Image 1 (tube, helix red, strand yellow):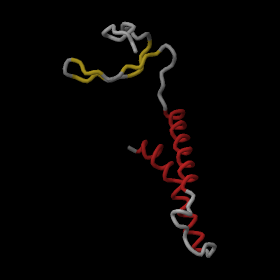
Image 2 (cartoon, one colour):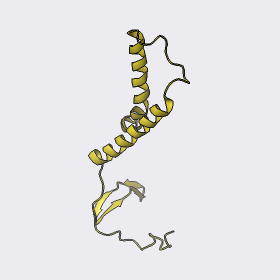
Image 3 (cartoon, helix red, strand yellow):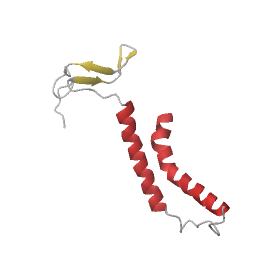
Image 4 (cartoon, one colour):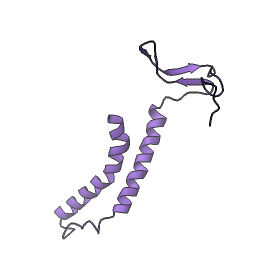
Length: 108
C-alpha cells in the first residue's frame, strides 16, 4: 500500500498540492487579489507534470528496489500443490517445461 502511494498517489497529487500552496502564499502576501477560478488554473500542466513525476517514480522504484532475473534465470510463480502453497522465486536454469507450457499447447 505504501509503495502504491509513493509511486502513484503522491507524484500525481504533488503538483496540485504545490500549486495550492503557491496560491495560498501569494494571497497571504498580497500578490494575488483573489484565488484563481477552476477555469483559470493550469490543469493540463498540473496533470501532465503529475504523470511525468509518476512515470519517473515508477522507473526509479524499479531501478532502485527491483528484483529482476538475470539472463539464464527463470522466474517461478507461487504454486498451490498438495494442499499447500509453495512460494515462487528466481531459479537458475531453463524453464523445464514443454515449449507451449505444461500442456504442450502452442503459445499464441
